[in-house]
Amino acid sequence: HFEGERLDDDLALAVARIMAHADGARRLRVRTNADTPEDAARARRFGAQGIGLCRTEHMFLGERRELVEKLIVAEDEDGVEAALAALLPLQKQDFTEILEAMDGLPVTIRLLDPPLHEFLPDLTDLSVEVALAEERGEDSEHAQHQKALLSHVRRLHETNPMLGLRGVRLGIQIPGLFRMQGRAIAEAAADRMAVHGAPRPEIMVPLVASVRELEIVRAVLEQQIAEVEEERGIKLEIAIGTMIELPRAAFLADRIARDADFFSFGTNDLTQMGWGFSRDDVESAFFSRYFEHGIFDVSPFESLDQRGVGGMVEMGTAKGRETKPDLKVGVCGEHGGDPRSVHFFDDIGLNYVSCSPFRVPVARLEAGRSVLGKR
Ligand code: PEP
Ligand code: MG
Image (cartoon, rainbow, N blue to C red; front, side, top):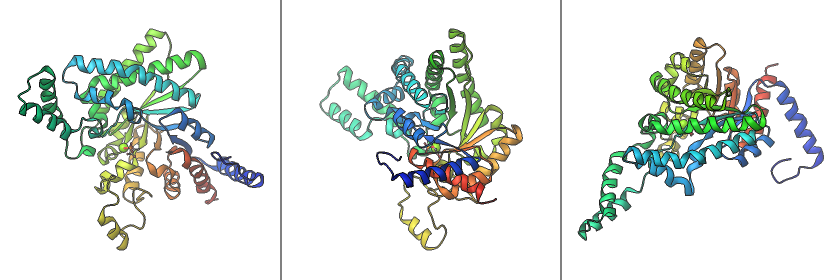
């Protein structure tokens, strides 16, 4: 059965047989990218074997956006602590629900990786407000606060936010942020353990480029996990791993692996950073010229550029496994659900791909074909 539509019985049986054949043959596991219990449940119906990427920044879109904004623009310790205190129970609830939806399957929770500009107050609005207040000669507490806020936001404003204060950099800039997320994950896992056996959260650090970044964050997370274990008198199994989505990380993967329990390749950013193309401007005029000239016949954001970006994935995997031969390695960029890319990931020995819920059946099928086609 596919979402909302009942297949004709014969067809449903044929599809089920083909899927069973593919599942019986494939080596690659197939996980999903999901940030809500609804998506998680849908993906499980499509056969996902876990969550390979839960983007926590997606949990703060809409009404909750303001809470992250408060944290980012907080100018003193009290402001940061107040913002974190508001975020902690919400995150704990989010993680509890998603662990519940996956019921013992692995759930890779990625620490916050927002493009900062999406969570900053609008610079133009704020500038106009401050200019008007100045023109009126207003000197109220609110006017002074808005003026201080404007200069703070100006300092945070970046020309290239995708190359800026994102991912692990934000966690290092605001140390309490990853502490709060680590605590929320550990507490959610401990609660879940009390009612339902063994939850399997995995914590993933985004945009790591240096060994030291991961060391710093790992220490913060391990402390949170240890504190919750001590408070509850239990032992939690929470792996801590990293995304490999910057060329530098792929080159240093042997050293990064010392502090990582797993790798997950972020091929969206790795393509962006590898080619130097903005992933947000794929409609850009020069792309069509590139197709015309045969520089590529399909966008490298859609189907993995196997030689270049794929070369980094292959090298990063090999280097990581020089340090840890059993290192679990997956991919969670869009390519995880692209048929041609799935064959490539199987060929180079990854353990899993993770893709959007609706692409899970395709990934299962292609992972099976990758093995069966070679027999
Ligand atoms: C990636 O970069 O491939 C990735 C999965 O992370 P995001 O798309 O959230 O940057
Ligand atoms: Mg990324």
